[in-house]
View (tube, helix red, strand yellow):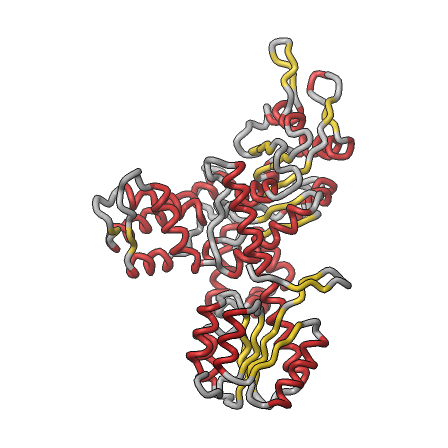
Length: 470
């Protein structure tokens, strides 16, 4: 991590900017603008001086003109090699799109044409500063998560993999949630890793050494769930509930949308009073806990429809964490594949390799079951492969199997929702969902146009998309 100066007046990091330009007037103007943004600035006028500055001093941002003797694209690449974390802005008289694209491909963060207006320069420096600080925060969260995992979780159940923009945003949100003492609502489709996010929040929080207790609202029978959560008497002995066991720590309600309505009311009371009332009239027990709750349902819509308690929804929805589906972060697929192959390999075995064709096959599928489905597919492929390379045919076979299982699961879920005996009648909800999907496909994903052609309001369409997890 680069050394940072500190602005003692407001206690925030003060970044160092290197301005590289042959024009003295340009350098001085850049220095004045940077000073107004709180940046410490160093001015150089040669490529050699720029290389020396980057290699010997802490530099976080660079504003440079590539038209220098010994400079050009090579200088840009060399700076990125010396300090991969710097944000480089290219200022140039050339306004051609190919030139700008080439600089971005070689590692530049932004491009501003010369001569530039002061407002443009100020915006570019502000964006670069914010980008550097976001990247630093993300790296800090990753390092702390790594330490927490090695110290607290020997089973590596807290591993979160990915460096896509969506995942970097998730890391920063986890960091913010961990620092808060408020309840957290973790949103995401089934299989995205909501429990991993909850574990990371707990491990980075002040309660990290206290209990982390999971309440799986899907796995516990409705007739037993109140006793499991609040406690009960069995064989004449009081069995403490999960809330009491988590006292002083964190309780994680997985798929809280499945919690029975009556139990929701008792949970609200327990959170308000910071104590639980076990069944059978036993005396109350202390239960001061931090609550993390995850759901794949739209609880706002469910609460408005009377299917989820509104007061519990508001109590949970203080800090919100969105875990992205795998189809929105496909650039993470190679990292995930390597991780799962390494985890499934036996001690002493050579690490299994994936060809570009296999990676392309993996990225062509949308993975509706998300990371959970992806992990199963990789495990099957590795077990069915005798050598060191997974063939494209083998991966196509596994992806085809995953697709068939996903379709079957979706069909079964519809049958469970609407009853096994439908006499060949297609439920209205199924027809409605298909009509929305067809409209979006024909209109290239334009939601406003889709709402117009479906003759419904845009708010209704967005609600339907959430409801059907589209």
